[in-house]
Image 1: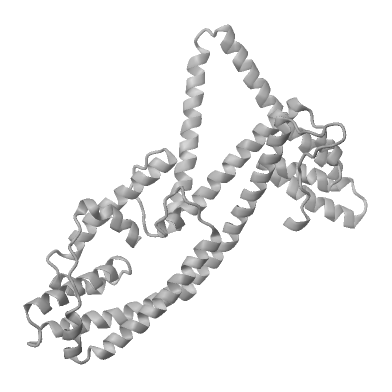
Image 2: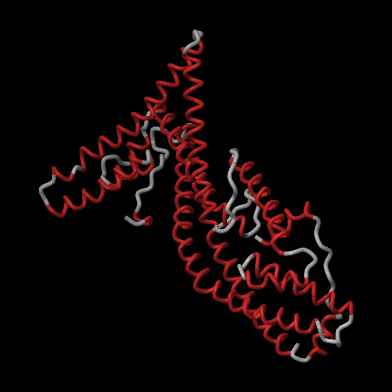
Length: 384
């Protein structure tokens, strides 16, 4: 069933009750938010393969061509360095250019064959600088993620790809949940060994009742659907096929404790109608809202995990929104930029065959101050 044909679950005012209660309004708000976040998650799931394909087939191919031109440029600069036309100031600028370009080509693009050329024109060898930079960058990223997700990362952090970071996040989040559950279990065990006050007993009884009511709400919807849709009870082959397909969706929704999806399937199966939704009892609605709130929180957490690696790529703070459309737009901008830069460096390579043109160009080049290592956190996110 497409999203356009999906039955929308909501509570509407009626002749008996023209003003919705607080719980009914909350129900509608939660339904609306969950629906929006589900659509957002679906957009990400559809866009990421497109993004990765365009990244690999278009952008990375262009980057490789651009880097080939830059390798020719540093080789030209290396040959020019020994020419008598260039004085001490010119040579310092040439060395700085070679060091800067090869530093990125080696560190970002893996052109290890340029290390000798880099070290020839740099005060510090590449491996030493890279190790210090990686250590600082890793600590910065670890701290950022620990602050965002609220758990510690002990091992070395792999910065090589968003997919590896996402896998680590998933592993850590699951471990964090398991640890929290175990701590809660131990705490409950310790509490169970102490005499309980009347208030504690009352609170536990209320919480147990809520949990039972929440679980019962989901089981009740599931039971009604399975009873009405069980394909083995259907004689008509076409109807049996239709019910089999719906039951697959019912089982998937129940496995995820997706109450909203189960309610939508009830509407689709015509087990309930708008009048039924409008007359859900207030006490039951309270438990339904609690389930929906947990479902919304899980959705937001799942989307945050998907977005986080791409926010790092774009140097976006975690609290700023990022849409799949913006991600694809950024990639399109990067493709246009790399094409422009490639055309420019080809023109320069052609012009600099005349060393006098290179010398004239160096007059406009200024050597930037080297950053202190304590300032590398800002540079890391720019480069990343």
